[in-house]
Image 1 (cartoon, one colour):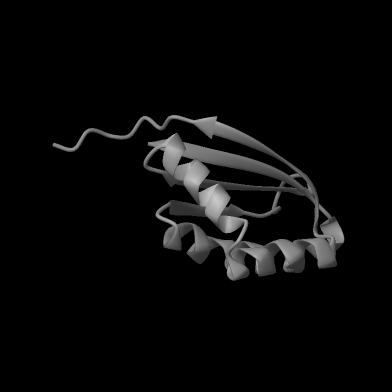
Image 2 (tube, one colour; image 1 turned 30 degrees about the vertical axis):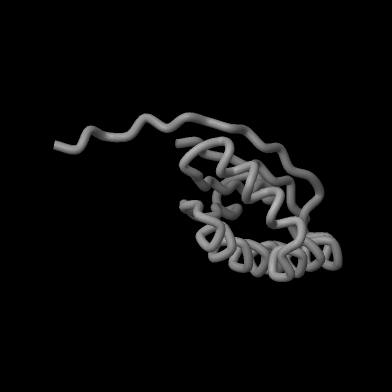
Length: 104
């Protein structure tokens, strides 16, 4: 399993727009075989920081999702929404390997 952690620098005046963007993406990740762990928006922290975490069974599965998302109309709608609203200033992606509790 591979998890993708994304740190966003968002426009503090457009948190509501970013939340709309986030709600657009969560079901899309699931539709492409991933597990979304949620988005986390500013609260008692920097007002321009948001993060998300989602997982795919493998890096190859993530890469397949990225490739297929480029031609998916719903994904394109989400990308376009972020561009139109300017809610995202920049983002950084990190790939992590989770350590999960033993089942037993």
